[in-house]
Image (cartoon, rainbow, N blue to C red; front, top):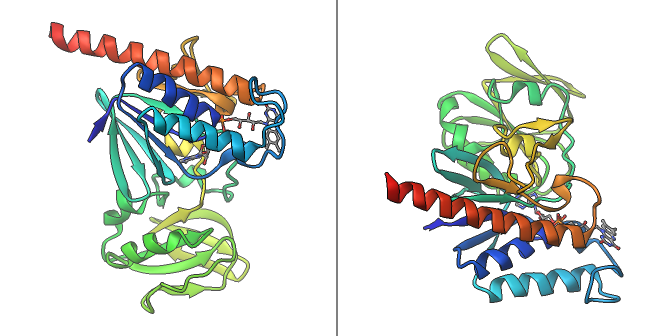
Amino acid sequence: MEYDLIIIGGGVAGCAAAVTARQRNLSVLVIYAGDGALGKTKLIDNYPGFPGATGPRLLQALRDHASGMGAHLVRRLVRRVMPMGETFSVLAGNDLYTGRSIILAMGTARVKTLPGEEELVGQGVSYCATCDGMFYKGGTVLVVASDAEAVEEAIYLSTLARVLYVKERPHQTGELPDTIQVLQDKPQAFHLKGEQVALTTDRGELVADGAFVMRPAVAMTQLIPEAQTENGKLVLNSSLQTSLPGIFAAGDITGTPLQAAKAAGEGNIAALSAAKHLILLNNRTKEA
Ligand SMILES: Cc1cc2nc3c(=O)[nH]c(=O)nc-3n(C[C@H](O)[C@H](O)[C@H](O)COP(=O)(O)OP(=O)(O)OC[C@H]3O[C@@H](n4cnc5c(N)ncnc54)[C@H](O)[C@@H]3O)c2cc1C
């Protein structure tokens, strides 16, 4: 199914955007990985209309409101948003969704990368087994994993290549088949070695044809590298549109103040901007 709007993030900004977008009769999918900053907030005393609310209670109320208005909510980590002409493909877990517009509402979750990692994205380092696994058919790949979510990806990769599994953080790997070698190395840094990628570890060096880094969060620059940034922040216009027409942003991801009421307001603005963008797109299609 193609959605009018896909919202990435199910916090205040994402849910507020979903409510307004449904009011404008857009078909809306909200994809969220977890509870974000609001889920960690014990008491939030300055959100209008909810004195003394706890973060989790407010979050539940926001999600109930969004789904009650007809938005679809799914829990998955989005790894990549790909511009495809006038639509966007969104890779979430191993599923692909299509949207005619996007709102980025992922909050401020920081992702710590390994030295050398970002420089090698597209040159041996990948975050998406489904997108890039085939490039390494018959070769050897490293899976650098932070949690058990990586197990499924490693199993898929093992159908294509020999897999060496390295843990960035301790986790259970119970379901891994014996064909996947789980190493005890601690990953430290990436570099190129000829045409291969090398991972320096506390035990030495691991060399492979490609490396897949699997973490429970995705840096914004990996999620949508095509969007223009300045000093690590998305470049936005007054409609909260990014440098890519049809992709908007709202909430903590746009910068300070990191406040729930501001996130809700921006969710509202971004949804109205997305609705306007879709009307212009429809008119252009009719005229053509
Ligand atoms: C301890 C604490 C106390 C606070 N107290 C207050 C207060 O008193 N008053 C106040 O106004 N504000 C307070 N805040 C700030 C407030 O919680 C945030 O400003 C607000 O939650 C921002 O909303 P958001 O929707 O932008 O981001 P978030 O609420 O962080 O939501 C982000 C969403 O994006 C999802 N996500 C991230 N990456 C991905 C991905 N790749 N794929 C899919 N989903 C993804 C997350 O799982 C989450 O659902 C506090 C924050 C903290 C941490």
